[in-house]
Image 1 (cartoon, rainbow over the protein chains, first blue to last red):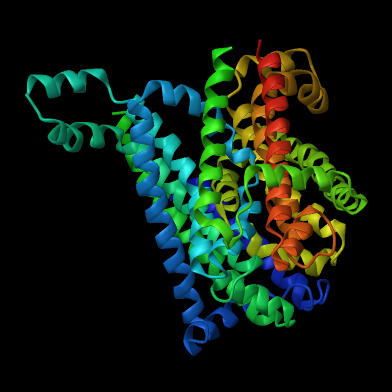
Image 2 (spheres, rainbow over the protein chains, first blue to last red):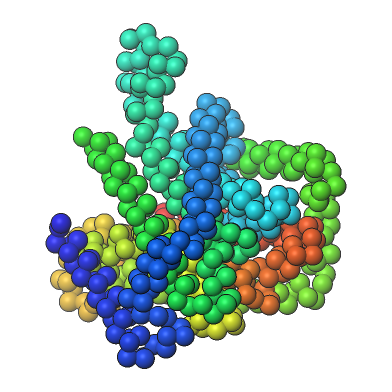
Length: 249
Length: 242
């Protein structure tokens, strides 16, 4: 590990230790925040007793569905827009300012349309995630070096072979950045909509525990989400870095 | 002119798709664009709507001011030292992509159920991108700027205000654009959960009554306001880049 990596570890550990001490000495009352060690044991109990596996699976299934839909549809829409320059120049200003709009406010609209359940949750998560993938696809297809297209011509490749052996690998680093963002947005969309209004899932379980003053379980679940999302993001980020490094070779 | 025509055409297509969808689902509750617009006009004439809107506006304004000041200050602090920057960047990036809504109960437990919880939640959303952009802008700043500041014997405070801040202004504006829209999102999500006022509450309340025109009208209004704020900051960005 690099020197910065060690310092980072020490900083995070010191922050956790400070919180632990502040909670244990009663400087922060346990009705507000419970000590990190208690959060960890609560998380362990949750995982061993199996009371929340149903919620965990519901959330992960929604995230997976939203992620796959956003990445697939986003790539498709991106590829189509890229092939039609007039449509692209018309749509681009809207795509650029899309994330300024609080899209999440349309979640109640989907609830009225689809009812409370995973359909509304997946729909809003796809809406949040898809534009990141569309933008990444446009950038990726733009950055394919022209010489590669000429190479495909010389080798007399058909359109399908050209797409799979030239265009996709060449655009991959940019596409993967879109994948990474889409997954992060899918997580945010799913957990947030479960938290605001739903009947199952990790976000719902946290809201339920909060409403019932069950701090111990609430913090255990929070730790679970923070750890889970951190692991997923770090893994995707590692792949992303490796692909980006390939670009600079 | 052409740059306006294209997006206008896309918007027209979107409106048309909305109208078609409205006709397709018929009575299941998706009002037409016209009905939504009319509901919006009705809402704009109601005192209750303005009471909710002013709650949201107050929380949003406070969150924007505090997160801008805090984000720039923290970004400068971390960016002045290369080690501090490289140490904190992955932590900040991870915090940025975390579903912060999971942490909202903690904010509620600390700040109570009032407007301050929503302001704090807005700051949580808006401050991180600004910190990241400010920090990276300073780390990538030409070293000659800082050397000249050292040669002129400026104090750290003078260096920040008269050398660093003007040099990184474009990136700060870009970060602020992202931060402002996230502040609005944070405040609204805060209002949607465990709140009795604000536009977020109004939307949730209308949904519980199945009052779809109000839900759509408020969501649409917020989208338009967000786009206008974004466009204003974008114009500022362009004006200061030259």
